[in-house]
Length: 102
Image (cartoon, rainbow, N blue to C red; front, top):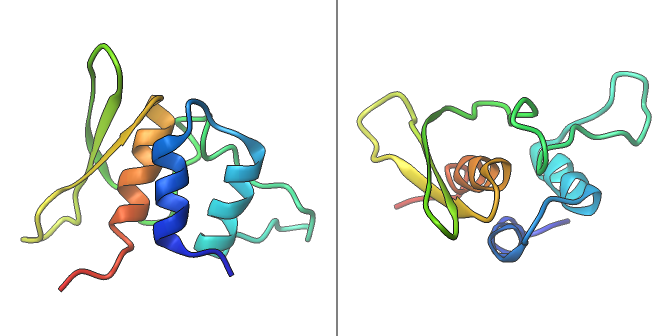
């Protein structure tokens, strides 16, 4: 089983998305292709391949990184993801929102 914190660290260190990272995200979120095929959404390269319950309310870019904010839709604070591409930042924020918080 893939560790969520380790996956987030790998996404934060990635300079671009990859099918390997896509498959690890699919494993974490429990994605199963309708036909049983080993085909995953392009989570790390597509803006459209959002995670279940992903609720990104803002994305920003500076000269080095993208930043995305996930909103739980309640009184919990926003969760920020920072990555080298917009897709990576969005998935990082969504996965960070899945981490247990005290």
